[in-house]
Amino acid sequence: MNPMIDPLITELNAEAATTRRVLDSVPAGQLTWKPHAKSFSLGQLALHVAQIPGQLAQLLDPDTVQVFPFVQSEATTTAELGATLDQSVAAATEMLSRITPERATANWSLMDGERQLLGAPRIGLVRALMFNHWYHHRGQLLVYLRLLDVHVPSVYGPTADENPFAG
Image 1 (spheres, rainbow, N blue to C red):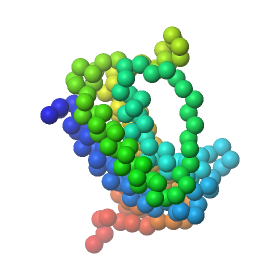
Image 2: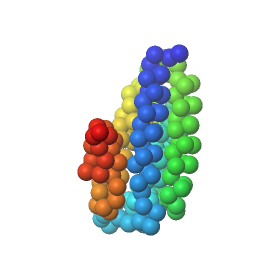
Image 3: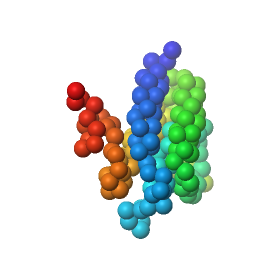
Image 4: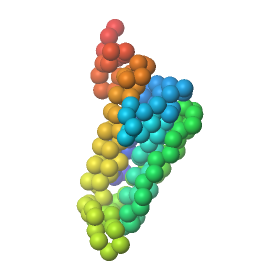
């Protein structure tokens, strides 16, 4: 039992269930749709949302990471989204379960050669990057769904399409 990490794993699992409901609303025939030329396509954004926990776990596991170019691939099917989320959450859970209190408070660094671009205690970056970053992009995905006029599931409360509090 790790009192620093166990609440994060509980949150990860609860938010994964919510994220699955959002990903289940992604329309298969619209994966290449973009709300703007500078935006990710729906398929890119949905796949990114599915991948974030696992990708960030991989990034935050070592003490130091070199900066690298980020290229987001696009989902080709909606079935890919659920499987990717499952793998991603499993990888994040596995990494989080290995974090000791010492590793949680140890500094993590993103480097460009010898120059540090970002450095902070790992536990803070788990919150900021793995979780808050995930929620941010999931929120973007909800806007995409609304713009496409498809079912927008409840996340933390009612939407125009779903009210978990209604009888």
